[in-house]
Amino acid sequence: MTTNFKNFVAENFAELDKYSKTIAKVHGKNHPELLEVREVFLAMQEKVQHGATKDDLAPEINQLRTLTSDYQVPADGCQAYQKTYQMFQALDESFQN
Image (cartoon, rainbow, N blue to C red; front, side, top):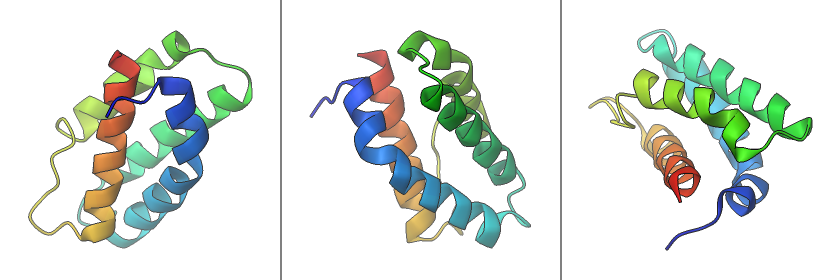
């Protein structure tokens, strides 16, 4: 299922905010990249709130790909970790369409 980017943002950013905050808090000590993932997501939220277009978010999408190794969950990742990365991957896919 493909969802356009704007709809994905409207429908999922609140949940992504919750999940990215949780996994950064719970797993950030062992996976410091999650703290950066959280910061990148917060930057995206800020841009969206100020009317950013899809193209304005390209740097953050690219950073997420790099920081998450293309959304690969480590072996010790919990369900919330998996859900968050799945959502980021879906965000990326909607970005590319």
